[in-house]
Image (tube, rainbow, N blue to C red; front, side, top):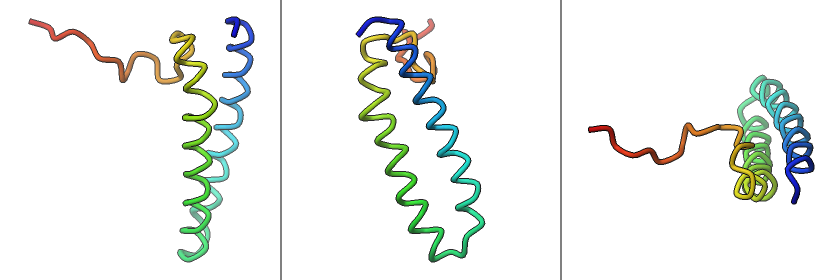
Length: 78
């Protein structure tokens, strides 16, 4: 995939993530039994957003990783 298309996709995925985060705030106001069901589903959606949509793009275009180099292995400083 070319870099321009990858950037557009990651932008769309970022907007989806923001909407899911908005739903999280609302879900947390629900009674516990309802909240549990909805949080589980929301968590699954967020996991799929990363693993099935964003990660394949990031593997090809590392500069588009939304976490930057925060989780990259770095050489030990001596």
